[in-house]
Length: 463
Image (cartoon, rainbow, N blue to C red; front, top):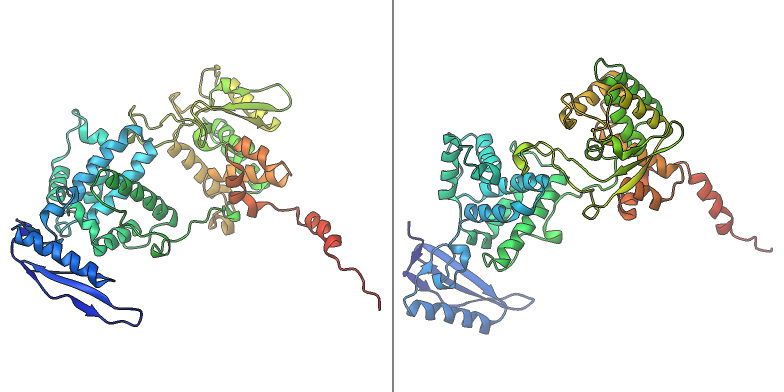
């Protein structure tokens, strides 16, 4: 279908009288579609109208949708959004982590559906459309793997999307931008997405727009900024209700440790999160040789690696876990973390029970490989259901294994350990640490009040 036309008609400039000053609207029609643009100064409006008329006199075709001479169009009119999104993914993929790749695909999927000329046919199930985009179109490993043939159903969906995707010039229309913003903020069932998901999608899409501008697909970032973007705020501070008290931790670890077969190993894993404040992806990557474990007293971890679980389809190795440097640290950087004497005893017990060597994983899976997140989360959920009282079970208390780390760091801060030292052990910066945990520092209020009581007390005035 031809999207350009030589049939162009111009109308006189309209003056819009307003209390704050007049504005001037240029109006014209290309084929069947009317266009207009308003300027604050009449001279500018007249100049822009003259440029359009000059192009028409030269017999230049005008783009029907944009209303501009085709020669004025950038690459935005030549490439559709789906083609551009594939180009961006191919460019970003080699330098991106597995989680970044997965989140990028998640953000581009609803944006692509929002930028279709028409909704997908009724026989395309919405979930299958999203899966085709997320798992194949925006996954370089699967799309380019010669050993993995894309299913016919998926290929049919992707071919239809490619034919019906709007050109990049669609970003110049505010109604299309609004559709994308709404799609990024909404789940498939029509409910609002989590605030953290919306923030992540916004960040990813702004990076996509930066790429589009650098490569001359767009002249400016069309996404709304500041007050124009009414995205929900993400609470940086943790919910105090997710923290566990010592008695509850003790009961849960005891319940886990009494499970048959590998209960004591899982207890050691969760105890490491509670006593040392490690992230789960750091704990699963620990080797026996990374721990200094004396017979008595405090030990020490040398943490130097993380193994986040991202899914085999998103990693270069095809493994479920991806080897990464420590979060927020330079390449090859390490940090030391003290090991509580109680944890030292627990770790020595499992090293002896499983006959672990220095090069072995400290918390191996059943086949000696990396401990899977799905496994330890299932163990934790069972323990929580069995131990946590019903009135707390329905709250965020200990809902995730990560809450053990939150509990540990809060305990350190409440024990008057300097924030700089806690941040060093935890692998955070001091500002981030305080922003997350400041509301959880308790037990020091009486001391603070005593300090300011005398200072603020007013002297007695003589009668």
